[in-house]
Length: 172
Image 1 (spheres, rainbow, N blue to C red):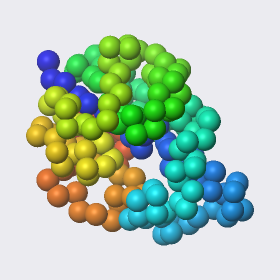
Image 2: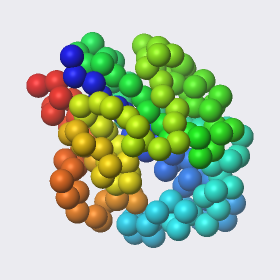
Image 3: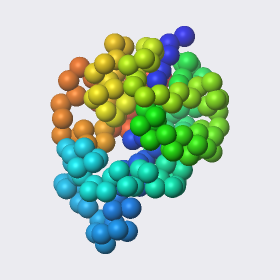
Image 4: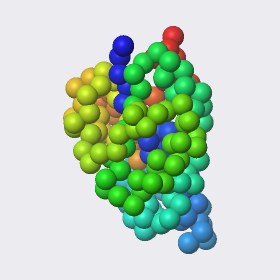
């Protein structure tokens, strides 16, 4: 059975919604798409680091559309793991685990990997929104479109814009 590694933030958890909402609350403005496209989160949002270390940032993140249904189907046909480089923000660990239990109850604790670097991950397919993780991965790679990567060429990675596209690629 093939193994899939699925990133959490920006792939199943809509952290961009959190950034946009928190920026709007702090500065009284909703940033237009053009202002954040092609920019790393830390550049697009002046206080990104403050936001990600705020209580509730990860716990309250909305679920990315259709990710739950497609992940449940993938879980029936693949060895599925949610992999998050969460050690960068160690205080996020309880929130991320709680979020997964709430929104993806079919994912067991054995299928959750919180790590520092994803170079240790061994799988056949990786779904991620960051080149830094996909570029070091030797298997098949799916680049999940987010504002920070939307202007970049996908290179050797297959770009996917939605969970419906992932379903078509991996379950058809």
